[in-house]
Each structure stands twice: as structure tokens, then as C-alpha cells.
Image (cartoon, rainbow, N blue to C red):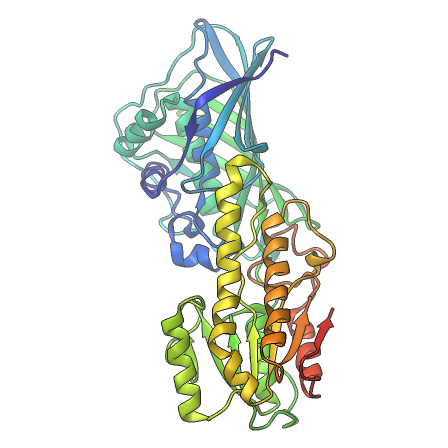
Length: 484
């Protein structure tokens, strides 16, 4: 194979790009379009449509004259995000073209096109109107997606929006339509809202590319329950002509176990009755589980969360844990209503996305560490003196990665090391302070709820019970204890 040829101009995506692609394709999956929805997923931000990344790649490929595309394979290897600068590499061998999109050295999208001699037809869009069977993403239950399940319908891109997308990226109109349809199929039909598109493989049977409307059929071919992966066997036709056939694969983002959403436990013991607690990052996962466990033991719990809770929830503040004004307001409220603080639990942490120590990722690593440290540093600054006066306890939720680093989490490991050191220094500056550093194993929360990350994860409720049980017995002032 020839040496890959890097395309010097970087590729980057904006919210407008997402909106244009959504309008062209009919894919309105909230993972891509809703900031609020995406914030509560493991990604913590809007994810770029994988098929839009593929279209952007193909816009850099100029096929030679007298060649036509016979097969397409696209792999969506990693999620893409807004404002990141990606690079394109193109290589060719014996009539097959490979176009790949990279984040630094990490391959995020890979496309292989097989070609054969023949006139290349660009497939300019014929006049027509958009035809999308669904306006909202389907919300299938995983147990209902069984082999043999069939869906079918008619599909047509929005012609005006499609024109904007093809002009924006310079991609072949026919292939753009193919990616629009496949994105719609997985993101809106099957698996629908829970979809993470992973692979598309198509053989093109016809050059009937000018048709505005396609008929499609998709049947569930197989499901791999180990990874929550579904394979759809698909076909496209225009009138009586077969256009394409093949398969597409998606991962299914499973729902969290019910106990994570509806925490329940036995009657409280009253062992922490009258103690005042602040939990930073209490809207979901471990923070929410600790809040409930503390309340069942009689503690008076104030919580601070950026999202996921109602501002009308008793003793809850909604705001950024790094904002001194928000923390001052919470401290003043606690002093007014309780007069003391016994526990500060620093649990908040940004979503963890894989990054490498490379120039392309340096700013994102820096920003992550800064944010992760600030949402522990600011509460420590705001409450340490108050805790010291009551011989209270600060709980720092760290991670097992400080002892067993993960290769693609340098930012997370560095941030957790930093917040542990902040807690250690706080115990020197405030000698009556009691300090518990917690290093949980992998927990199953909204922030880790991906098919791969679920493997080996334990319930946050289980670990929350361990933490709160330890807090029932006083720790020694000025001494650091680690709970793993």
C-alpha cells in the first residue's frame, strides 16, 4: 500500500454542522443535538454524528475519472466532538481507497471504498421533498430487539439541507445520501435513541442514483449480549432497482439498573442524626447514593449539583462547584440553618473521555485537569475553616487510577492525584480536620454507562454504604485515612 497522504487542512465540526446534517438526514437523536441530554451521558457533551465525520472524510477524496464505487465500509471507532481539530489521511492500493480521520494518533473514523473501472456518476440530487418516517428517536427496550425483527419504510433527504451539507464538505452527493440514510436508520429507528453507530458495510448493486426517494428494509440479524451490539441486515431500492445491500452494526447504550434511579434501603439507624453534611456532585451515581445513605442514618444533607436535580429539592443548590459565589451562598445558608458543618464530601468530577499525551490533545488535558481540580479546590477553600471549628471530616472521592493508571486517562489520573494532595495539605493547615480519601473501583453510573465500561463495574449503592458506614465512627484529626 502506498504511504498515507495526510491532508493538511484540519477538519472541525460546529453546532451548525450538526444542525445542517440533522435537517438533511432526519436524524434527530438527542445525543447529537441536545446539550442537556448529552450532559447526562458518559460523554458529557454533544457527540458529532459518526456519519457526518465520514462525509467530511470523503470530501477530501477525489476519485480518478472512469472509476465507480462498488463497495463501502465505514467504521466509527471513537466518538467525535465539537471544535476538535481532526486530520485526514488517504491511501490507495489496487483500486481500493482508505480515508481515515484522526484525533492526534487516535483513529476515529475509517472508510474503505472499493472501486472498479467504469464511469463515475456523482448522483446529483433529483427534485423531491424530505421523507422521514419518524420525527423522534425510537426508544426500544433491548429485550424487544430480537433476531428476525423487521422494519421498513420510505426515505428521502431534505434536498435543500442536503445541498448545504454536500457544499460544506465537498462530498459525493450519492454517498452523502447513503450516510444520511444510515444515520437516520440507526439513530431514529433501530436501535434508536440508545444507538452508538459502529460499522456500515454496503455493496452497491445499481447506478440508479438520481432517485430522490428510496425504499429500505432492515432486519435484526444478530445481537451480541456481551457488548450490547446489534447487527442489522439492510437493503435499499429505488423503484424496481436495487441500490445497495449490506449490514450495519451499532452498540446499544443500555438503561441503568433500576436501583440506580430509585434508590431504596432498609430503615435508617439514626447513627448520624443531627450531623450536617454537604455533598458536592449529588445529582446521580455515587453522590446520589451517598446522599440517600446519609439521610437514612439521620444526617441533614445539603447538596450541590450542576444538573440533574430540581432547584426546588429541599437543601439543594444548583450551580457550579468551582463558583465561589455559589459556595458562599451555600455556606451562609448552612450557618443560618444549622450553625455547623460536620462532613464535606467532594464527589464531583467531569466526564472522562480518552486522551493521549499529544499536541492535539494538550489543551483538552489542561482544561480537564483545571476543571476537575477546581471543583474540589473551591469547596475545600469555602468549607475547611468551618469544618475545622467543628472537628469535622472532609471526604475526597478519588479513584483507583492513582495506583493503577489507565493508558488513555492521563488527565483523570493527574486530576485525582492533585485533589488527594490538596486534601493532605488541608489537614496540615487545619489540624482539627479529619480526612478520608476514597478510591472506588469502577462504578456503574450515568458517566460510565457504555457497553464496554459496564463490564466489571459495581453498583454505586454498594460502595456508598461502605463510605457512610466508615463515617459512623469518628476519624482521627490530622490523620489521612484511605478507603479503597
